[in-house]
Length: 242
Image (tube, rainbow, N blue to C red; front, side, top):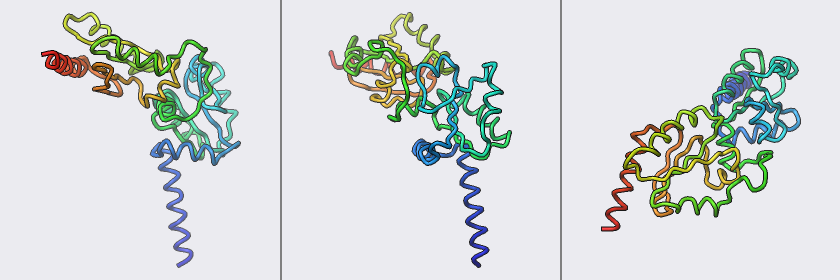
């Protein structure tokens, strides 16, 4: 019976590690595993070198797939040590994590939601943002009241979904009858603000009516969805005046 229990416990342990390796772990579990690994942790930043230099998790090594030293960096890693991987969301980190697992790495943990989720949830990063560039919360709040309806776009020039949103917002800015003032904010320059606003996904659109948040949507948003939200609040503004 004891032997049987030992086998069951062993199978459960393997299943747990396998599930975590498939990125089913939460942000809290990722952080806990990272702390427990201590000095043995291999932290890999799968973004570009330009992104890495702006901000990164403490102790991380940049592993840019477009770099000439990419394979050399991977070859220098220890497959037996716990390896933690992240990118801005989970695009590049997922590719790297899969490659590591396919090459025999024993424990690979991918940061759920990527660095955007890490920052928005209040976890620390090393940042090189220059003083005076980042917006303070009070400055942000002033922006939200700069028109009756203000649509804040929080994204990044490095984010794929954010890039797809740019032409959508550009077309709305010039569209007759679109009632909201559109303001775009670069998350990489405003990590402290992203934490205060709990921005966990890029891009995130936030609509303000009279400085009050009335709508929020994370991820890519279509022209129709944005217009519906703005028009609904335009109607409420008109009703309030009448």
